[in-house]
Each structure stands twice: as C-alpha cells, then as structure tokens.
Image (cartoon, one colour):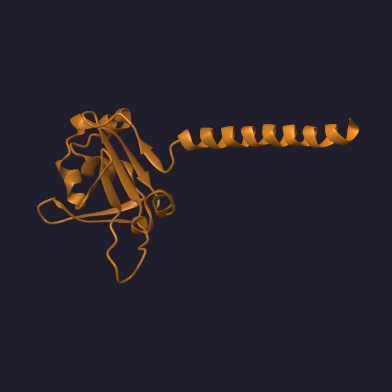
Length: 145
C-alpha cells in the first residue's frame, strides 16, 4: 500500500495544482489588459467622436491633425522604426479597419468601450502587424462579445 499510495498521492497533488494553476490563468485572462475606456469615461471625456475621446483619454498615443482638424497621423509614443510609419491597428466590433481615420466618423453616442493595447500585448494577440499597438472599439450596435 505504501508503494502505491505514494505515486497516487503525488498524482492527486499534481492534478490539484494544475487545476488551481488553470483557474488563476482563466481569471487573469478576463481582466482588461492595456488601457480600458468604459462608457462612463467616454461620456466624461467630452469628446464628440472616438478620435477625440482617444486624444483626451489615451496619452500613450500621438495624434496629429491637418489644418482642418481631421486626423492625419496616429502612432504610439516612441516610434517602432525610424523608417516605417506604423499606426496602431484599429478594430471596430471585431473587424479590422484599413484606415484609422474611421475613428473620426464614430460618434460618442454609439460607443460602448475602447481598449488600447500596447505593442507587446498587440503582437501577443494580433501578430507582428500590431507592433505599434491595437485599438479595439466596441459599439452599442455591434456584437456584445
């Protein structure tokens, strides 16, 4: 019994440890990563569009506008490359946008929340194209998940 009890006890302990380890990671995965801007914070920002909200609430990014006040350049602080222009990837309701200027066309009234992921988090979840970060915008009309 002693010879069999030892390995069985060890296996039971490892199984319990593995379950506890998995539970910690599931809990950690549900926490927001990066900068999270919820609906209340969006309203308090005073911005009229997603672009204006980001300008006021996400200082980790650099925003440049043309002389007419329209978005012209968008990048994270500290360039990823001297030669390349790498704006953050922008997703609206899970769909990748080809141009970040769509943020200036999204009124605050339709926004649910905005997540700003760093370059490290962006590349972890969205691949090497996200080296400059990722902007995730969820609207009230879009999918809830």
